[in-house]
Image (cartoon, rainbow, N blue to C red; front, side):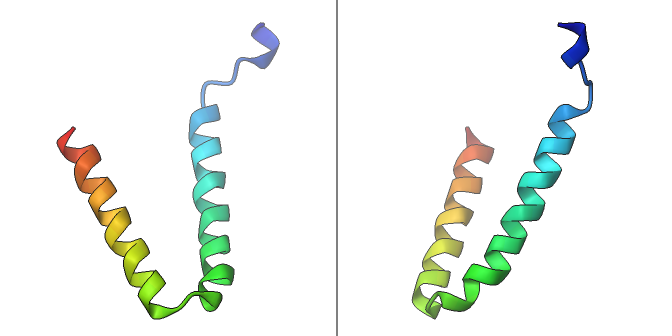
Length: 54
């Protein structure tokens, strides 16, 4: 199992998830209406608040 040991794997994975999520948001955001964008922003903000309180 020492062959698969990589101490920074979590950082690398999170970097790629955020990077590709941003690219998907830039490309896919053009197809969303303003109402859906507002709903997504509010739901993300509520999720962050809930996680912060929990």
